[in-house]
Structures are given as structure tokens and as C-alpha cells.
Image (cartoon, rainbow, N blue to C red; front, side, top):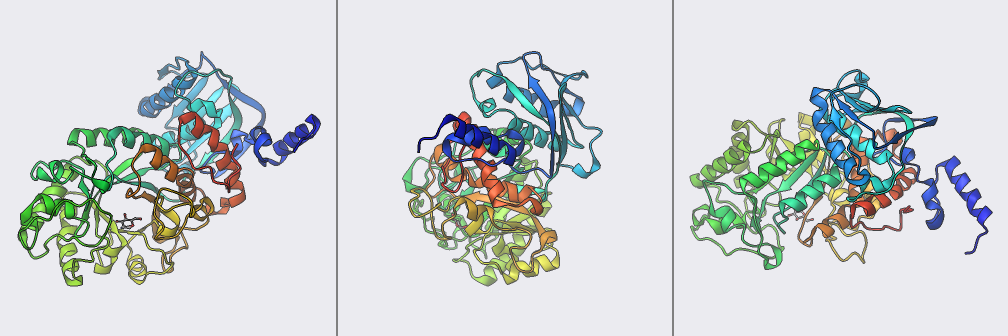
Length: 519
Ligand code: NGO
């Protein structure tokens, strides 16, 4: 359609007033960063006629414990601005990160962010809050701030007063590195991408039928043989303990805790193939490169099984600073109910013995586990009696309903990657559900948080990961972080549309859903 120039200008003026984004051509003018932060903050007040300009003389000022988040912010901003942005403990104009003076409402993960003409101040009570505040600051800058090469300014930050803290303390992503192996660099890139949306846990699915991905010194063939292939028969791979530690540290600097998973007693073909003695018939099966589930089981009656679990958990706990070990427990279709119960009752205490808290897929709720165990709900219905009973006893539930939160489900019938056993998940489907009232008998206070799992039967590259995660991961991040009172699909899709130019600047291969007005 042809339009006269004045018509376009009226549209732009209109969009600035209403904050709405218009179709294609006119969209850019509406993407005012102040209205496009994802997840939407608890409270944002715009301050008229105030702008802070990041310049070549900007300094980043941080008190002792704020140095980590300050250095991380400086590294991010230096890439695209080319500015020196020195970090020091001085006081004055510029960007200040401080662990004092924050409104107590912000809690352990929230922050207050104030933008004045002289500078930006981020206050929090803990480093995690400062990191979250810096992620908001990145989104208040122009999208090209995310570029990996030097860009021309200016670099305005709109005048604002933001008070923000999460609805749920746990907002996770999961990456299945077992079905297809991903190198530490690919995992680190995913960490960078999810950190921008205030995700604070990354669950790594480290072992499954098709591959074992972490070195265990006392059972070396798990990695060297069990890790030697993947779905489709490729070379697979595994992380050395040093590489795993490097991932843990990289994540930690970005406010993300790694949750390692060893899936048991099913999903264990890679381990069973590596050691004949783990099999009830003392015969190692061949390595497996297909995508069936439910055919493998550790041998429940054998003592060596628990020596194996003890060794694996001990070594994994020793390199995992986070509080959780995930023991899987899903789809144990080749383990009888009685054996499943025996197995879980023996292994849950092993995790506790090594100072860690158990997480498991919600199947574990069947054994009435201690209330410290966190069942992760992955079903497709809104009622599950054993999960509701666990919540009633006091277990906290992590919410990952497969028909809402699984990032490996196709968007629609023409998506080439992914699966569809739990249905198609367009962006709106991923966004429009309430974790605090989704499952009957599991109310807000029984919910620990949300996690968006990405299983990798069909996912091979970092571009594949990005295509499935963006834009649905930010949708799950928002329902985990933002107050339900701010939940609004129409507003969300506008904010999401404004993320498009950021992902372009970052080189993220995202799905351009037609539900979203991309800027
Ligand atoms: C299920 C199954 C996984 C699959 C995934 C694919 C759970 C918890 N167990 O989720 O093995 O990879 O679906 O979507």
C-alpha cells in the first residue's frame, strides 16, 4: 500500500503515544526500549525529558562485591561501543552498581534501577540482583548494543525508575546434551542468551540412552565409550571435569546455577553398554543411536548398581557448587513399579549424603519422596494425583508442562525441527498459562518455579537450539519472573517484537512467528 509521508508521521506519533507497535515499516519508531523490557518489570516509571547518554568517558563504579557483575556489564558494553568503560570502586557520575540502599522489596534477586541525566544506578541486596539489573539496562540501550563489533552511537538510556523482583525464585532452561552432544562453546552461548532474560538455572541432561556426557573417574568407560555416539550415529562427545567446571563458572558469573542430571533407572543404555556388570544378565547391550524411550533399566537387585550410583553422585557433587542433582526417574517402563520404588528409596539418600537436594521428573512423586525432593512436572494434563499429593505433603513442584514449556515441540505443522507428541506450541501457547494455578492441587505456594526444557533428538547445532528457544524461552522467562497481574499477551507480543533487532545484532537464529509484530 502507498501512503503519503504525513500519514506515516501520524502513525509514528500515534504509536509513541499509545506505545503500540505498527505493522512492518512503521514498527521501528514504536519500539521504545522503556516499554520493551522482557520479562516485564514489576514497576516502570518513565521520567520525562531525562536521558543518560553512555559515552567514551562513562565510568562503571562498583563496590567490592559488585565487581563481578560490573566487569561482566563492562565486557558486554565495550564490544559494541568500543568505549574503555573502566571499572573502579570510585563514586561519581556514570553507571553505579551498589549492594546498599535498595528497597527491601527487591529481595535476593531483584533490583532497583534509576536513570538520571548524570548516570544509571543499580541497587540490589545481592550480586544476583545486580546481574538482573544489568540485564534490564542492556535492554534499555539501543538493540545494536548487542553487536559483537564496534557500532556508531549514540547510546541513550531513557529516564526511568524501575523496581523489579521475581515472582518465582527458580526460572530454568534445560539443554539435552545427551541425544546430541553440544560443545562447551555452544553451551556458553546458550548461557549468554538465556541470562539476558533473567533465567537463573540451567539444567544439563548429561546422560541418556544415546550418550553419557561427563567424565566419571571411577567408571571411565561411561564417557569414553558411552559418550562415543549420539542420535543418528555421529561422534557424540563428553565434558572433562575441567570443561564442566568451566561451564559451571561461566554460568555462575552470569547468575546461573547448573543443575546436572543423570537420568536413572531408565534412559541408561549408554551406561549399560559401557559396563556389562550393570546389567542383570551381565551382558552389555550395543550402543544406541535411535530415539525410542523406555527400553533400558539399571539392574535394581544388584549391589553394584548402588556402588555405581554412589560413585557417580559423589564425583558429580564434588564438581557441582549448586544445591541440586537431578536424578531423572522418567519413563522407567522397563522397571517394575516395585523395583522403581526400591531403586528410588535407595538412591535419593545417596544424593542427600553428598550434600545435594534431589530433583527428579514428576514420575518420582509416585514413591512418596521426602518433601525436600523437587518433582518436575512434564505432563500434558492439568491434573496429576501423585504430583498433587506430593504438593499436599509439602514438596515444591517445578513446572514444565510439555504442551506449554517444551522447547522441542514444533511451533506448527510446518516446523521442520522438533517433535509434536505434546502438540504444537506457538508463542502464545508458551506464554498463556499460569504456573501458579495450572495443575489442580498445586497452587502458587507449592510451585518452585518454571523450566523450559529443550530435548535434542532433532536438534544438532546452536542455530537449531536458537530457533526452538527464541522466542519461546523469553515467554517462559516472563511467566516465571513477572507478576501475574502484568500478564498480557497483546503487550507481551509488542515487547517481544522489540527483541527481534537485538537477536539480529547477536546473530541469534530466531523463529519469526507471525503472532509477533517484529520490529
Ligand atoms: C519426554 C522424555 C524425553 C524425551 C522428551 C521429548 C521426558 C521427561 N522424558 O520428556 O526422554 O526426550 O519427552 O520431548
